[in-house]
Image 1 (spheres, rainbow, N blue to C red):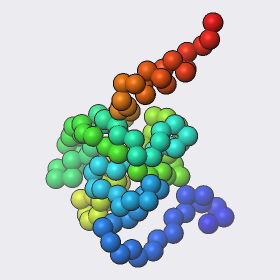
Image 2: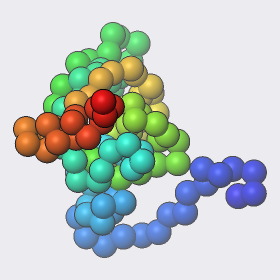
Image 3: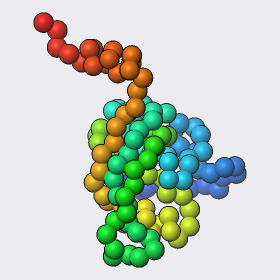
Image 4: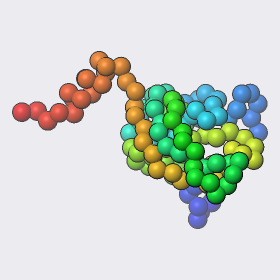
Length: 126
């Protein structure tokens, strides 16, 4: 542990699944780990990327375009444009997670009034 800052402790859980940093069970294929310095937990994000094809390894990646929720954090998730999908359990999820290093984009979804307020707060004052 003194040599690996990313060391993770595991414990057996009862319930719907592993709890993310938001304190709720993570949802397979819909929960995203983010850097809380840039994105708030609970925020909806639209993700546009690709993922490895677990059925035919070596084939081109498959498209992944869907609504995600920022529900977790991670030791390797640093910066505003990083994220980690929770793929769930089992061999297929392990394959995808182990081979996922794809570039992509995501959009933070906000109500118009809040988005306008944040944009105006970020503008330099004259």
